[in-house]
Length: 563
Ligand SMILES: Nc1ncnc2c1ncn2[C@@H]1O[C@H](COP(=O)(O)OP(=O)(O)OP(=O)(O)O)[C@@H](O)[C@H]1O
Image (cartoon, rainbow, N blue to C red; front, side, top):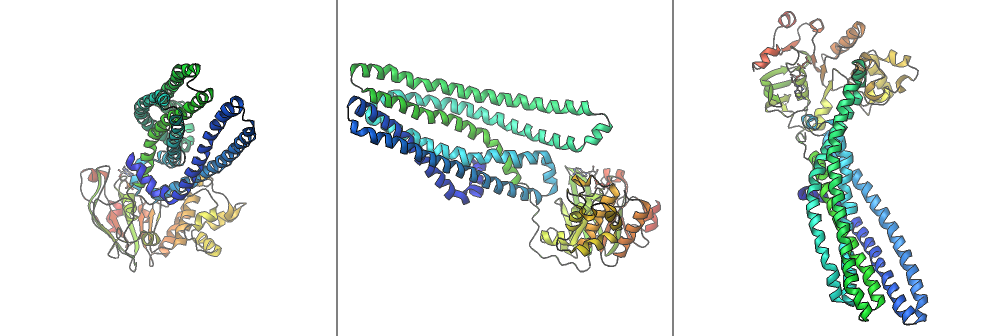
């Protein structure tokens, strides 16, 4: 944890160190004034009530009023400052975590799961930040809050001071013991929260499936199981937390009892004034208040440490940074050279060699033989185990990522649409494109007529993931987006699988129109779609992959279609 804590401090908090220092000063001012009123009270009792120095009465009244006004102002400023710093840090951390997730290899983010990532970025970041904006300032101020009344008491009676404050040492024990236990239980509790987020995210997107198969009860039971696990861990955390607080409040009473035991007889004998006894009474509370708060702060610090680790893991995700070389695409020739790749130690490609040239290239083969994987590797979604993928001789892992993204487009078999208008969903293909260009792209893939037949036309909201559109409509919008992007290399993963015969024909025509300009790699299970004289890469049968036979088949068209 210490390491994560330091990492966070240097990366996010240090740029705001001046704000933090200002907040500490405000806390100190607020804290100093809390000691003024007991001193004024002592003077009121000893000097005014007992000593009859009535001329001091007005000053004491004025001083008391001023104390509360100043402390109210500093409380406001420090509360506002802390809240603002909290928001600024939350903004900084979540933005950076979001960037880290976006630029990480997909393989790594998939390992964490979407729901878990959500809980890390939002909930865990919140708990981690509180350490800097609330806990650390209080920790520092508490030290001063202990020292000041302690010094005041020492000044009046050092022996009595030592007698009543020695029990403070007892506070260290529960702090250490419960702190460790809280850290352990909180770690498991946060992991469980992550699983709940994942489960909810998956279940909510699966509602149609759950309804169709009548799985409501099964799904509820699974959720109940998740919640029970969370409850069991969290109740353990709550138990430890409450035990820690309870032991604290028990020890809190000890110095008061000691003060009454030793200070009481001193007042009766006249060796201690009533005012000093009252001052001790107040100052003991002032010393032990922060000490008991230390226990709370310590337990919070310990229990937030797993949150630090979980957020830091996001920043440690292996990044797909690419290189710094410029990618220049002239021929658009893509080569897989002795490529090895596995998912979770399961080999998918071994010594895979293939070349895709300008024009139409088809990748065929049984389900699960690695066709989509090849396209994903070309998009650098996953790092290779061995080998090279080049575009016009340039290694894709050595070129700038923005160059690779600009030159390679991929359309997935299940197209991705985000919750916005049709216009926006096409526009993201090229944010600099004009409205005319967007309409032209839509016309090219034969979706313009459909769009204009809708009451809202291009401004129609597609819903989350494009749920308000049919699969074929979604696919055509994704195609229009790629046409707008106009990259020299286009990867199409079974894009015509959900479109009707007419649309398939028109989409294939659009694709063929680009064959002299672009390198088009098409995954298809439909031999009738394959154009004469195209380059065909056959990944063969699943059984061949299981036998670890390396894929590297460039076959004649007739064989690819009819074998
Ligand atoms: N993210 C992943 N993690 C682990 N295994 C995966 C992952 N994605 C795919 N696989 C496995 O890798 C193999 C190749 O998958 P891929 O999607 O490339 O096959 P495909 O040839 O495109 O299949 P299909 O024709 O069914 O679309 C499959 O056996 C699949 O189970």
